[in-house]
Length: 415
Ligand code: HEM
Ligand code: MYR
Image 1 (cartoon, protein in one colour):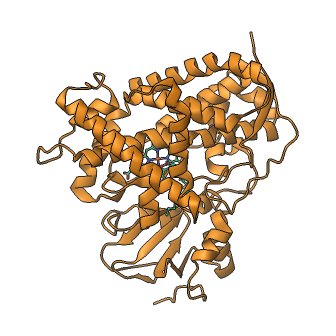
Image 2: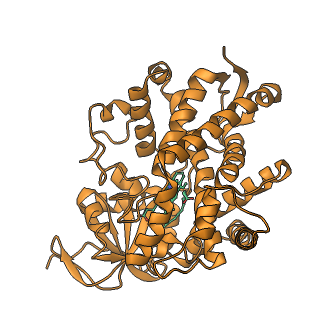
Image 3: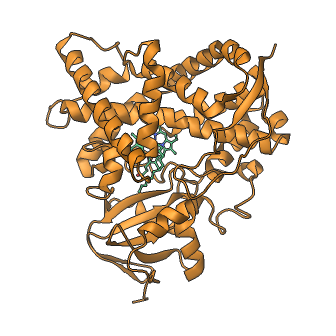
């Protein structure tokens, strides 16, 4: 049996928070190995990166998700009882519910709402002077996703809901008040949405026909049972929260257009170039750092022992920057995707493998569609300037963003 390289320190949780997105990759380079063991949150943990490791990680015979996600992540980002923590037939059933929502027509409808809302916002931006693109897109996506899911949202509450969803996204890797803000935001939102599900079911507040709210409120599991209303709320938040989180990728796309101005002209009215550009934004920029699972039954892999119950972390960011998969991984080069099939175990910003059989992100197609529309809006629908500002991405912060969320100014509609 090969001995697995090991971190020597008694616990590496603080080192993980300090190194952020580079934690696993730095150690893989130090140990010259894509697998090593460490201790995180006081428990032995195996860290992995790379293509073979991704294929292993998405083998549902070998790994389970029950109890994999640290509690602090469940209490903020994901909630409890939702699809992320399910296995086997329970997961297959719940995931099929999500995938049934992701029809081409529904994705188009969301995209159309997004484009309409973008156009409608331009006059206010023209009048506003400098705006934070991230903050503006966060509110825009909040408005759009509530309408798409079928949850009523008065205009006066859009900003508060955007803050609430962002609090859940920012909280998992933070300590102190900003962590607690995320927990509180989740508790409040779950309670509110559970009440709505109840009113939907009793007919007091009928869900719009065909909406995601209707699908989730009326979903019956394999035994014919409705979801507990708190679980239905968690799943509604599994649509509302991540669509708003797309604001981060849209901001990264704008940042990439700024840093690589040659691509502004290349993507304009060119679907292929836009596709390559969007895939490179998803590969290059840091977002979801790692996925977590637990070993179901002991096994050996590449001469290493994986004991039953052990927590395993797959480095999503590190796999997207793996030097053998991506030549010169630290260069932003969309043309690397030209004429190339996207490998489901190599480009994994939203997880790897199969959407139905495994835990790969249910919203990947939506994300890509919204990114393409944003690129078109940023290059053809409007013009703007990017004033001098600090645009450094801090890879120690999870999630990472430029300090003010990319300020743009002098916005005007083209035509
Ligand atoms: C799961 C990333 C957007 C819904 C995931 C996973 C990642 C991820 C890494 C977990 C993969 C795993 O555990 O193996 C992202 C990123 C997004 C995004 C970076 C960009 C903003 C979305 C959107 C939606 C969505 C727009 C819905 C509209 C989900 C759901 C799951 C999931 C429901 C759970 C899937 C399961 O456990 O089977 N996402 N996601 N995500 N995502 Fe996303
Ligand atoms: C979503 O809302 O589901 C999509 C985007 C969330 C990004 C969150 C990034 C930081 C989370 C750290 C989680 C560590 C998991 C082991």
